[in-house]
Image (cartoon, rainbow, N blue to C red):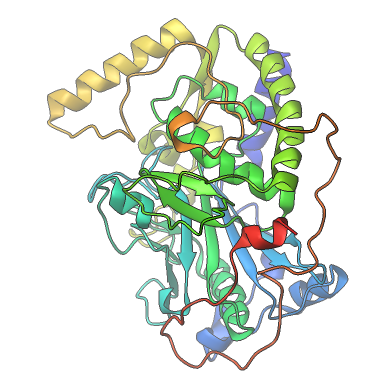
Length: 427
């Protein structure tokens, strides 16, 4: 089994080692022909794909990032108001290691859930085009995390940003621009360390960031079940997703969560069904990787696997390879020794070790059930019915339903008037 896994990683390394070499250049726009990058339309092949999937050109989008694989996905609303993936891009460069951004200067790229408005679009970026991630959000601020101007931009150079090629960011910018013109008030950006499958959670179970990732996984699961961006709130300094409060209690990022906060019944049952499969897979992979865990490579190690790509480019061009290409599975004891050694080197050099780069690894088995309760993140979901549906009922209406409106002419975000997500689940 492990031989097959390492073969898989080797194939991924070959496929993802270069952020440019693996892309089909024929599908990208020749930048020398672009007269107005801000209004450059999406390529014809993408427009054709949208038509095949039942997507309107100006329907809402969602952006999803997976650091370990070095991938950025664009998801778009279809006619039934569920989202489907329409495009995927290799991230040319991201700095730091897996884990959230904690403070200014730590070189970490953000992880979490962020709301992008028209004001986040920067048509005048010196990195061709840029979209501000919105870091710090309410969760980051409540937890004292600092930093600013963390972007999705072009130029393939990163110090805490997600940097794409100029051709890629031209398309990503166009997706967001068209969605805003269609009336979408906010585009949700979901930034994850990796796909939050049972196997990946087991591989990374010893990371000091594991508890944070378990919290993100709840939002990941909500999207996987509904195929709609979850309603995101923050209370008790933790993310909560698709929560309702019968008494209309508000969510205070640093304050107590509403006493009657709960998951709508239909969604709760669907999440339990999803989690049942996940837990079975988790038990299988915990046995497979019982004495091994994943070594998360440093930024320097990721750059080393794509060093040849820098030849012939400007000195500022700094692609990074994927963590899958540069990392590896190790014996737990060997991993502990290596991380302790790295910790000593960091302390000796005077570098600050934040929670995102803390080399102390955790021990013991930890699962990640899909619970929204901040104070009991590991508690199982209480389900009234033992009959679990294979799909989630589609509400009669949806807060993210596309309805064409006049184009957005201003860069100022307008207050959202969409009803809370839970009202549609509760019907």
